[in-house]
Length: 202
Image (cartoon, rainbow, N blue to C red; front, side, top):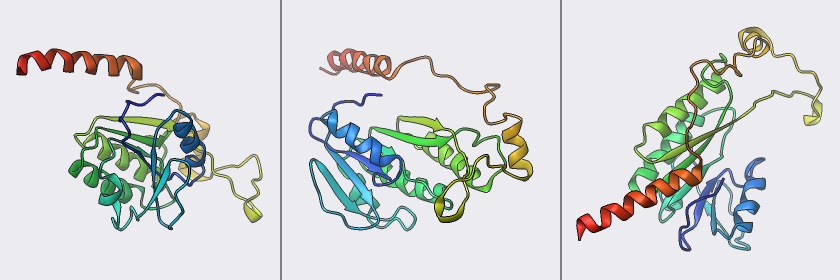
């Protein structure tokens, strides 16, 4: 995926120090983007990456984090409160000049009966209803449990959630929305629209 040029304006990344963010932030830097990372604990700035201290669950520092960022990558997530955190981010982004919001969700959020996945689904809805142009990306979810964080495979998830996964409910395409444009095609359409609007205003 590529991102629109922001002419020196930083991209805001939530969860930039987490499992996914640690891979994404260096790729953004390698592509030449300035990056701002929202983090709960102060960190030193380095190599084009600025850290802003804030907490999505309390809302503290979130407005300052989104200020001036035209694109927000919402990678932060946890076992509880994803919907609360996402609503705080969306509210702050609405009040700023954020032009695109990218959200990372989980396959099966609308089908697998896990409380955590329900918060991911509510987060998707908050993003979709934000009024900000948005993209939702999904990744598979696997629960791993073991002593000292060492996974033991295979992991059998119990109850309704386990049944849903074993039956492939998280993988079905029935009723799923599919995109018709690549990101590049979408941007080309938007640029063309802006070009036709400009003469009409003059």
